[in-house]
Image 1: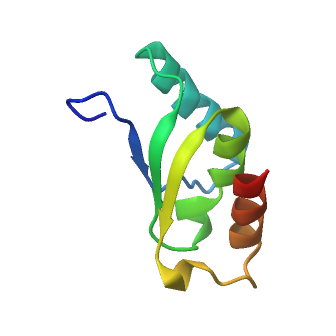
Image 2 (image 1 turned 90 degrees about the vertical axis):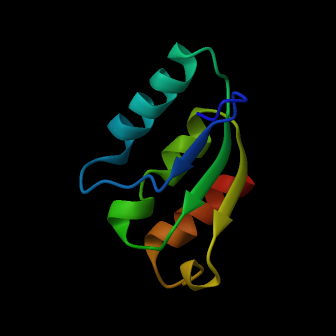
Length: 88
């Protein structure tokens, strides 16, 4: 969280089930009085960096997502699911 109350999350993956981690993030955001994530940065498409993105998008508003061009490897399930969830 920035001094101005903005919320940024850098990467959101885990080697485990994505639901538990995403729920923990939203509990932390809401526990600090927030209702959204202002910026989600996904550094690359390894599962341990991005597999929680779909659950984060389902859990509440993510205003902006920033990815490197190399992230958009549509042959990777994590990328496809993240993009589809962000559009929903």
